[in-house]
Image (cartoon, rainbow over all chains, first blue to last red; front, top):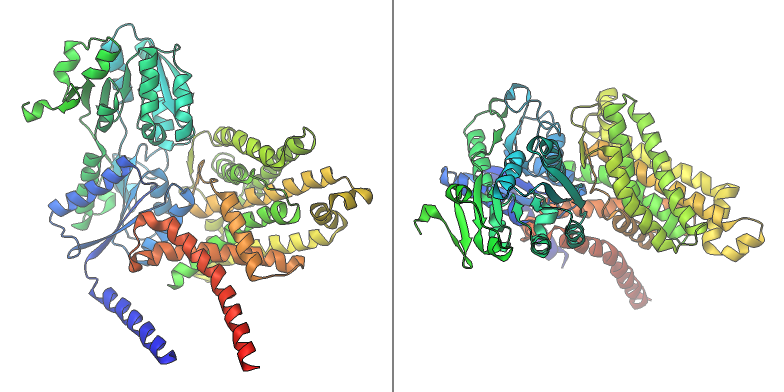
Length: 335
Length: 301
């Protein structure tokens, strides 16, 4: 009995050593703060972009995927487990993961590529976005959106819009930053921003309803909490009979009149390109922080019809996607 | 493997201080206090924002974090004893208030400590001969010091009155001690420790996040209960030691789930499941072994 058990343990140990010896490919640790459509899309984008850049999974690279499952206390242990597995590159999706990875890999040569971080300079991840020479082993891709542009677009949609209601979670670093940008930009555009706070998905309906009658339009940035309960904001906007702009084009079909920004799958692909750069030997302190450009405009004509709104032709002409008659149309596809 | 166990021990000790706080309310006072989910962040918020903005040294910053947590406990205590709000609700109310207060203290949801001298970094610099173990030695010394001070406190007259309050409120009143005062004091001490733990965790992690308090009560209770079922003793020194042991087991489970979970085919999304299963194993294996031993004894006799 004991000998049998000893054999079994021996086999497992040998198996582990064997696996370690064969691990010639570079280990890439990808971690995210929570399972979420946008963050999952970033993860897929990174892997797809690397595959297309010629890094074959299990031959050239091995992926270690981790999620903190919504608990920031898991961020440091995840980074430590990556370090003990001697990963070649860390891809840290979201601000807390990036901060934890930067702390755990401080003073090492292991490159850290962050993704879906709104303001890497303000949170102290890097010293400078443009001049990477002082950034050590950290570089990455920022998902800062053009908040002022979105507000201007709402004004263009209907000149009667003066008060903009933003539902957001002040506990999310990214969302907090974008809401501040909106508050700063509004006076210059002759707009007032009214905010309603939802600290959890369950509180989004109440926060959205609290704005009904007090605002001429709804605006939601890349706020993970609010995006998860987007139906509640759509319902409140319809209830108030006002348009709703959402800085997430993948949510267009769920009912906002306008959706801007970029999709997170593309964000992941851009991140993947940076990782490919790093894998080819470029040092992180030679790669400036990438800001994703080329925000798109998507229009949901069904939603506009529901509140009796006519979308100006000037906006329709710039739209890269339409949702009408219950399905999405893309001019690029020639439909 | 060594590095992983080293890190698990660091976390077990630093979160163990919060578990000692939970131990005071849950085990000693028999008061289910949910304030801790907020006061843990309060400690992190105070210890980070003060370090970044005030130029105070890391040790004073931790002392202020403790005081801020104690103030939070005081509020729950007053809500419960003076305003007659039920214990569970009093804690919940303070916890919800603290969410806004913590955001005010921090000024934003996330403070990075990557570019300042944190307490863990200061230790590493002050004791370079300890190498990789410097942080562990520091956290072990802190956790054990807190444990010993608690043991001493529970032997003083006030400490004994506090323990008696949880056991039998009527008896303590008959002895001329006001149980309300004892509850408020216990809640303040408990939340002070939780906040100290939060402050240390922030410095250890390199950032404070307003969401990091979520589940402090759950992991604290897990540590108290795991430790209590492994070390069954009514002596206060053993009880506080068991809390630290429970916390070490819990954090080791998290670490092993993260590091080796994939070997047995678990995915990233299975983290919490694997963690809980490992804790179940830690609880059940000693019990089964005990039963088997007893059976072996009966057979051989």
